[in-house]
Length: 253
Image 1 (tube, rainbow, N blue to C red):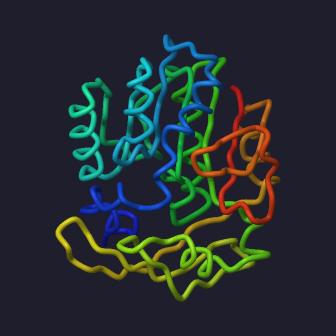
Image 2: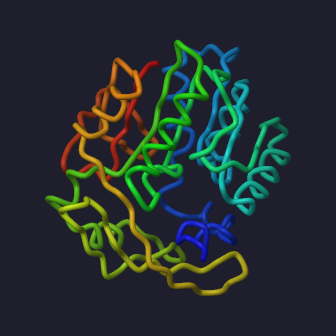
């Protein structure tokens, strides 16, 4: 039986590129580039790269990028876009919980949830962090975004989805946030690339800053910073707030 995220992304590449939450790519890559100090000799691993928006933009700027994703449909779209942009990105199909890399990358990025925290269990999510850690050299930088567990304590996830969605985007309803597991359960409705309408039951894990800090420390990371992830405007100046839907995490190995 397919997991909800496999069903969602099996024929949803072009529609995914129209979602409101994927429109801040250039500004987000500005932040990534600043964290690299503009050194485009460094190798970058893009985990859960989707249709390749960050990988392609970074390749345009001269960086060597490997993008991995579980969805072959997303990767096909990524390869099409890279060819159209005239850039070379090494896109590969891999499960982020089982990566073949060992000490190969100077930076790893994992944007817009990028697999973590979509997994069914905390152990699976942790496995992603372990595999990303193993793929990186030392020293190296890790940047990712994840769902802010402070948000649903003060705000409605369902209302947020309704207020930020545009016509044609996926919609979310019947949200139920479990205080014991920090998982949001919802029914997601979306139209695939062939115009077919789908309804799937999803759940995602929200994390509070102290959890992320502990997880990263347990893997040997240091210089851990957690900020508010403002779409298209990532910055260390944005202190995390309860109304930030996502958090931006930076750390060094």
